[in-house]
Length: 376
Ligand SMILES: Nc1nc2[nH]c(O)nc2c(=O)[nH]1
Image (tube, rainbow, N blue to C red; front, side, top):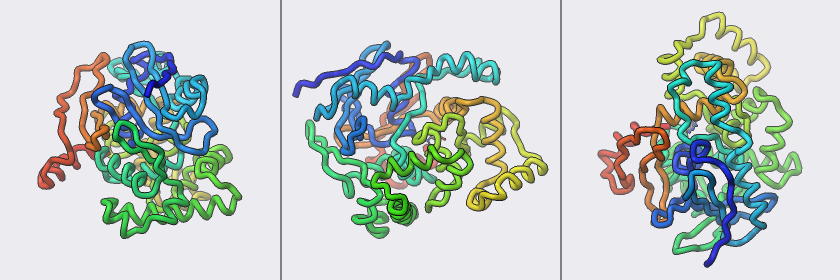
């Protein structure tokens, strides 16, 4: 099949597909190791149905995008990916004009072509429920299992089958907790079922059919604290997961998700620690937000607000760069159905020693060690 490709003009310093698509933000991109193309399914433009899309980066000045089903013209596809990759945000400019003047530590920090994605919020929400106490390899496996078992088949290309990401209705109607447990979701099985049911109920009460539309409505009509309160009302969503959804699924660029890795950075590099007085102030702030008050860890929340103040309106992007530096590495699916750890794109970086481990082929006795190394 001959494909037509559209060009998105963005340099490799601003966007490295290898460092962004399989590095802990998105979990459903599949790499064709022969062609170097990345494939997944997405809803394009205003289309309600999923299409198979392809991306490649063969030049340092642009990336290229295509789709098998020609769901829209190339101009609209290019616009879709400009929005997905948030090309309106210039990371090099942010580094020079926002982060470096506010934080001299950015003098020694390269951006590695990393940027925050503008993903579909429902898929982001479910993916980050799966991310709790988990590594990229297993999150990837879970996201693909959801699509294979509960999504719609979109097509089969070069013997790889592609599925949509299941809606909350599809999960509610087709999945059970026991089945998800048998697919390897562990305790997250219950969270996914309960969350899908609540979202179906919320959509019904608001007379909205689409998960994307409901979550975007919540995102637009609430300030950050209220939005986080809403997100944390779903089963399995705590402050870190809620903040990842805000940042990577709702374009809340200032939000800094704080997990053990960011806590380590904050304490080691910035000596951030809340005093009792600061904790009391946060408690007071959350007086009208009972779920936040219950679920939040005040020390971690203080780190979140401190880093947000330090790095400014695009603090979440600064976190993304430090997170990649701290946790490192890319891991994702290939067209043979294997999940592999890969080398980072070494744009102005010394490549890390990333052995091409096939996670699925590693004996389970060793897996627990690898899992704990890669928890994100
Ligand atoms: N940029 C980030 N990616 C992430 N993945 C994940 O699971 N957590 C994070 C995060 O905090 N930042």
